[in-house]
Image (cartoon, rainbow, N blue to C red; front, top):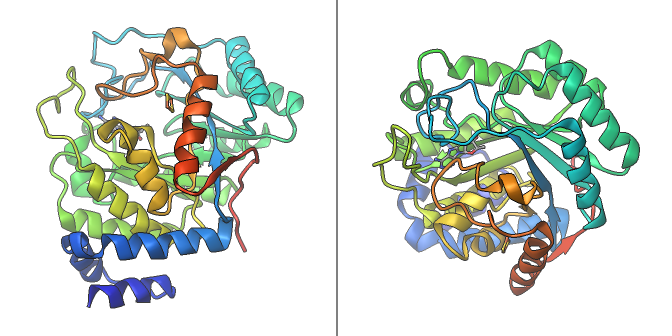
Length: 346
Ligand code: 5AD
Ligand code: FES
């Protein structure tokens, strides 16, 4: 019965939240079948290619206070840093030599990075490397700001919605943040022509299986070009310190369902998945993921961008990570490629 649901999903039929709920509850029986179908779909649109994105963590200053996040404003134990424009550009230059053709500028919501500062950085990266894509992951900004950064040359924007339930969103965030504003941002990013990435945490506090089932209905409606998911991992200096971590095994199964729901989606096997399970990223690729995002941040700041405890790859040089990832990907029968890796849309 659940095989039939996977077949219907693979043939492009929309499933209901109840049907997704059934699949999630029966994942032990169906995960291998779902992964096989998800791999076939990825193969059809992207072959066995795995795209790499160079992640530059530009700042861990953040005005927000998300209950789950290690760089929340109230965490006075976080050692704060921000990269200067020259340092960001230098990171991108060294990443280019290593073969990266996408740079992801990620950071907390830090007022230092005005539109003028970011426009300068984006323009410099795009003029030295016109064959590269620039992805931003800098949180909620105004429509005018998103438009200005797009005009400066940004191609893509990552902004996880964290949960598709407004009520659940309210339990993960303080009252000055809202699900409505998050969705407003995502819709504006799409309208402005960004390749847009949404996403959620798996196993975050108070999440129900119904919330997870609803994620798929939400994602089908939003139709983002990218979806980032990873297990929730507690950070010791946050209000959620004593909640249990989310499951890597469930995350891997959900990756297959996302690939089947949004066939052409760019889908990373995330660092959080690799942190929750030492071979989590390989399992993610075998379940239908096709993106990896190794860290290009300068070695001196890596340990400071701690969203959750025990994050992997904080001591490694980017070049070491690439070699490591290349070996890991090879074992899955896929290969890392040097390509911008744009959304293969129709
Ligand atoms: N565990 C797992 N993921 C986290 N993120 C933030 N804090 C945690 C945590 N404790 C994720 C959020 C955010 C992304 C950059 O990192 O989903 O959008
Ligand atoms: Fe960083 Fe393996 S990917 S050490």
